[in-house]
Image (cartoon, rainbow, N blue to C red; front, side):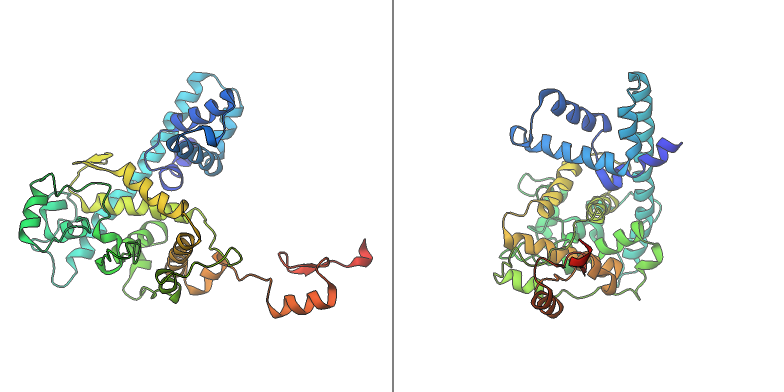
Length: 346
């Protein structure tokens, strides 16, 4: 039971689809072959990063591997970890399936027909309310011919993991000239995350969405920032949000049970695209977009007061730092720890 309970963290904090054995095998391969990241493919490096997250968030796995347990013991343990992981994903999906139906049915005007709360039938592309949210931003769902082609799986109107669905964007609005504007700020997305990872009550209408800061406008207009500017910390809640996006997509679909490939839409590829956007910015301007997005999420999930702890103010350059440097010197003041040494104590 303890291993099954520990395994519940895997699908939320480590990987949406990877098998535990596959991640452990990648770690073992690197040890045996003495290879480094530069010699590995992007997929191998991704699996190795997931392995490091695995042993961080489920430390009993690392203890088990170091215990030199026999193979049959490891297989049984991995089976129990996997059972817990799949159970957690199933619980999250089941909960979101119901609450998303309630949220959409409460919209004005409501869906026609209303979405069944306890069933996945007549969702996905079969209901205009869910279909519009799932529709790739490249397509115009309001166009009758487009709807017909999407529902008919026309080769020029396929719905795949290589297209962002509308529910990811703030207000469902996509700007072709600035494709990252509003991305990952969809209202339904935020409510779903808070429902799973904070509490159902945190999704009440009283909990409004905080507006974007001027940072996004600066990024869009070409502000690139600098290496000395503060960056929001990349805590694992960011990866929980990535899991949440995949759960929302699944809850809106008509797929009755979790599977990676849903009518040509591959959830693992979709998840990896989201991870790449956040974790592999190409330059300082792209990194600024990530920091702004994380600040937006931290403010809306944890509140404005608490968000500051995830994006602390740099100490260097403040009036206190300037005065202490003048008075005590650079070698004495420790800005990172908020204190200064007493030379007489040496």
